Length: 406
Image (cartoon, rainbow, N blue to C red):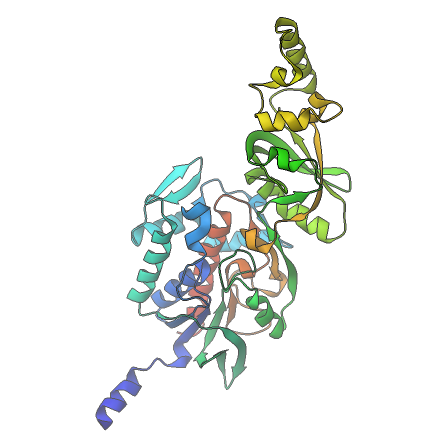
């Protein structure tokens, strides 16, 4: 019995060669796999009963893994250029090679890449299988309460245990999403360790607007161009399918503008939107088109003159305006808020990147403390950019976290 006990003790992982990953989402799973491949003993502490919960709901359950169309404006934050060295070390190609190696093939839709299975859960399942194959210990339902250094090691205290390791990677996400565990606890841990946190706000979500009869247009989907105005000055515009809702407006073009709208609104600035429901025409051309239609179809009512050009519900709203055609090209909305953290796909804000090494993702305040994913003050546009940041930052944090201790 004594010999068995000694043998078991010898097999226990040496904390001096251990990496503790807080968070078992996209960034955390990638960090764990990469650290384990470097030879580190790795433990994941996950808040939920299963890893990858948020991965499973991305892309409406299909998981927009990444995007072939990478451009610098797709990444935002106080220091958006912070991402450049991380992507140089672990690129989109590296990401696709990695996923192909673990069994995920992709299909492309205008540069947006999805798993061929069409199921987001296959991504999280294969990531976890890879981690387990590398002997990564996955501890679920672990709620991290405190992270601190003692006797040259990092201690991660949960409700029932204190884990020890030579390096810690904080990859516990943001407050965005209705998925349990998206509680922003990572921000609190980072602040406790002395890091500055840019106030997190919801991003990639619908915008609430001052009521202009939205109950009449709720459920409409239509093409259009939308312009964001801050204090009356046009800032950015997007074009694509808009979703008109009972609270205001949603859809991918709105998502792309929302992080700027929400941050400006939080700063007490006046935030507005202008919608052009006929972006392919000038207002003059549209008026000529309707005048000609009125000439050839004198039997048509004002409503019928717009039939075939716009959805019926939208026509009814426009006809209530003083100048329906002018409103069709320049429909003004006043933003009053957003649909909130639970409806957001990501957060803007997070751990200040100026306090993090842009090559290794190691804290500038503490040795062998690393950050990855959405916990940092980096958020991406809609289209797989946030997951690409998770894969790349997770990989880099995992590699350097292991290198520090092996």
